Image 1 (cartoon, rainbow, N blue to C red):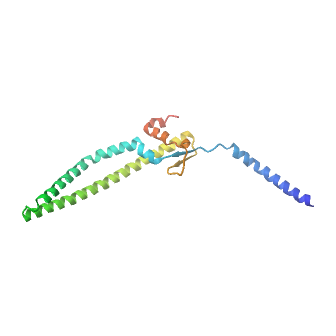
Image 2 (cartoon, rainbow, N blue to C red; image 1 turned 90 degrees about the vertical axis):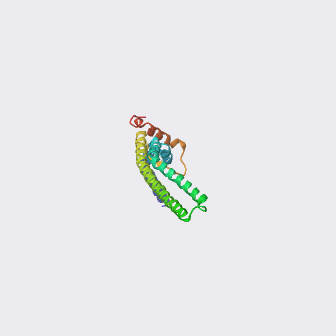
Image 3 (cartoon, one colour; image 1 turned 120 degrees about the vertical axis):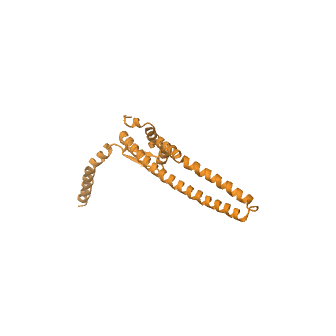
Length: 182
């Protein structure tokens, strides 16, 4: 009786192994997945599109920045004049100069804040637009190279072997290269 129960377990194990054999063969025959890593911060910092955007924003805001610097210099000169001459000036003249200093100080602060807010808004808009371009290039590159998965930064560790950041940067520098097969 004992041999019959042991035989059943042996036959069951053999049938289970035979049933799993096609799965093992399929797993070994399946091609390995191709995984890549891309450092988006490096792409944003070094892409020619982002560098051009920075230059364009600097040009766009240069006149207003120069006006603000001129107002700041004028404010510094008025403050210096008030500090130097207020003791020897007539009270009404000193009060008028103090009001001018305070008015210009508020105006400079308001202008500086407005300029900073507008610059930040424009820079964020440009960054979002360029981010989408970069993302499209990453996807195009990954598809052209047969990648199954691209992992963005930050990651705990990525081997230099799977880092495609430089290749994507090259595509960003030479957009026509994206249309030709590598």
